[in-house]
Each structure stands twice: as structure tokens, then as C-alpha cells.
Length: 363
Picture 1 (cartoon, rainbow, N blue to C red):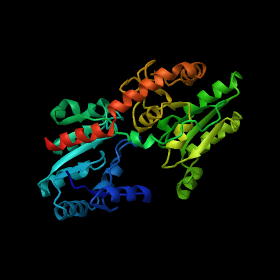
Picture 2: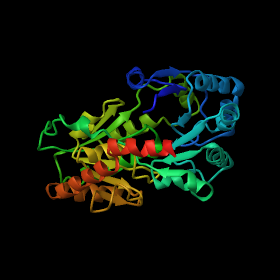
Picture 3: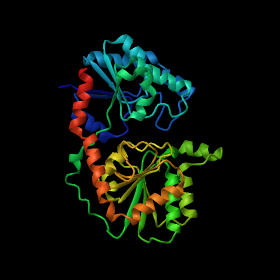
């Protein structure tokens, strides 16, 4: 048994904080701890590095006091954005560090800041958990003995009482979701949708983009207008209007409770420009027995023609062809959705996940 204490640099959701409090002995949020954002679609910059380094002594004191006051023995760092703090934490505390890498650190051709992140995490971590072989890749050459590949878990019990038959059966619902940034491929998805609709072959399709950010910073929007920088949401809305897609495409705002929206879909698409066909969205879609179409090569979850459909191409025509194939073979795809469910239930089962994490802690 472990007593769990959480120290977070931010928590934008009161709902998530309440969950932390429910399952932990203590939860604290201290925004004076800075993140050096390196991945998940954000390129590391020298400016972001020095901003993270500001008041370094104070940041280390906050973390060290938290560790000592709560007699913490294992520090589980839940992503890769605190690499600038590792050396100081190790120097000031007799503690084991377990790093949990949930994003690819080397997205931008191994620039020197990414090398810094990999080296700090690799050198000062006692164990490194990666959610797939892809996240492990930057660490594998120098820190192979420290690495444990453990995919993200999913609470399948939470789906037990969920009604899967809530929508109009005459409509085919196709959707995507993800962080609202260009790399997620929203425009690629829209272009594929437009191509399919313009075929005039189907009159029962509804496309949805889940997770649209309409609450954007007013000052940033003003700066974009002044310097003629294109706003991403405006680009998407203009494309929809230009191609008369208003009745065929829904832009759905960000919500924490995505399961009902995912459950409404027949087909889930992950058109990521980073070609990373893994992640919580794919796990959730497969858990809900949706047919998954994704871009990329990695077949940990999406095994082409077995648990979904995979393409390494970023062509909207190719994406559209995959969607069309699934539309026309929807009824015969039950085995694929069932096999996908079995796969993620085996890989991401919460009970198995718990024992794997405990195994990392105990070694």
C-alpha cells in the first residue's frame, strides 16, 4: 500500500482537483513551479527554458519542503516538462524519481533543448515509464535498463451502465477529438469530410470535431489580427462556410466528459499530422467499440484490417478513402470493433496497470 501525495504546478479543472483529493492523502497546487514545455505539439525554445529557470531556488524549496514534510520516498513525475528541476531535487533529497513520459520528446529533430530534456530525465530518474515504444525511443540508447513501457490505463468498469444505442440508427456519425492545435489534423479531417460529401453519394453522414477551443485569449486574438496571423478556429470555420458544410459538420466545444460524445460516433478518426496512432482517445474509442481510422505506422493499438484502419499517408484523399471503405462495410466491421475492444481491455486494464506500476516502484 502507498500513501499518495500530489503536488501540481496547475489545475484548471475543479472537477479534476476533487478527484485528486478523493484518492490522495494530500493535494496541493502551486503555480510558482514552472513547466519547461517541450513536447505535445509545443516546440521548446530558449525563452521558455529561461522562463522555467526563473526563481529556480524557490521552485526547488517548494518541492523539497513538500517531499520532507510528507516523508515522500518516491517522486513520480507525471510528464517531461520538469527536466530543469531534476538535478536540484536529487541534490537536496534522498529520493527515488520515477518519470512518466507521455509524449514524444524528440519531435523536432533532436534540437539541443530536447537533448537537454532527455539527458536530465535519463540521468536523474531511477525508473522511466513510457506509454509506448515511441515515447521510449529517445531514451533507449543510453537508459535502456531504466525503461518500462506501460500503456495508459482505462477504467472499463465505468462503461458498464452506458447505453450504446442512443442515436438515430439511420445516421452515420464520424468524429475526431484532441487538443485544439494544428498538429491534431482538424483541417485534414475537414478536407476528407468535404471530399466525401461532394461525392453526393451519402445523405446520412454527420462529421464532428470534439474539443474546439472558443474561449481564446482576447489579447492574443487582437495581436494575431494586427500582425495578420491566421487564427486556427477562424480557418476551420471559413473552410466550413466556403464549402457549405454547416449542416454536415459539428464543431463541439471542449468538455471533460467526452464519453457520451464518443459513444454517439460510429467511426472515430485520429488524423494526427505527427502520425501517432496511440493515446487515450484511441483507447476510449476502442473501449466503446468504435471503428478507428488513424494516420501513422505504429500498430500497438490500430492493427490495419484487424483492430482498425491505419495509413501512413497525410493525404485527405487517402483518409477519405478509408472512411468511405468503413462506411460501406459498417455492418461487417463488428469483428474489428470487438477485437479492438479485446486488445485494449487486455493492454489497458486498470487492475493490470496497477500491478505494473507497483512492480516499477518495488524494484
